[in-house]
Image (cartoon, rainbow, N blue to C red; front, side):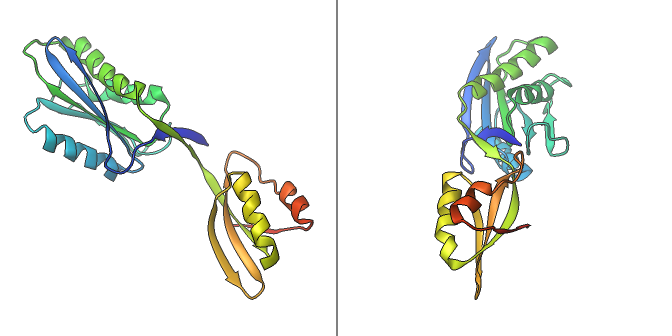
Length: 205
């Protein structure tokens, strides 16, 4: 599976803000590979804006379609007017590993349930429109057992094919390289074996 995630470092956040009927909505987005990363974003938002009316949230701490590591909160807003619209905006983006906090400063005019839902979704979408992203490729690990003489050629080929070498172990016979093969592609090392002019001992890690 391949999907996009926020191109943000740990504790880095991407922001955007909108104003609706004098209420200010500040959207903070983070890379959330796990719930702890999202929790850190929420803590930072509350620390930076302790006097805000609400800190509403939504997160997907996994790939798009994740069913377990997800969540959203209205934080005191009428039920279903904040967290769920924010979560739907994240789902619609097809991003994974993403978390968002929308900080609201009440402007004195009540927006109604429909107006609130639209405002919170718009705040998230405003941040997502300019969010830098990168691709994540889910990978399966395989062990390649080769001689010392073949290691440099194997490493060069893997680099050309954008196949990461996750680990290298050695013994008296040669090297055992653990590679990360894209899980959405069938394993095929024919081109590598042709380059080496030999068969490779392959095992699932």
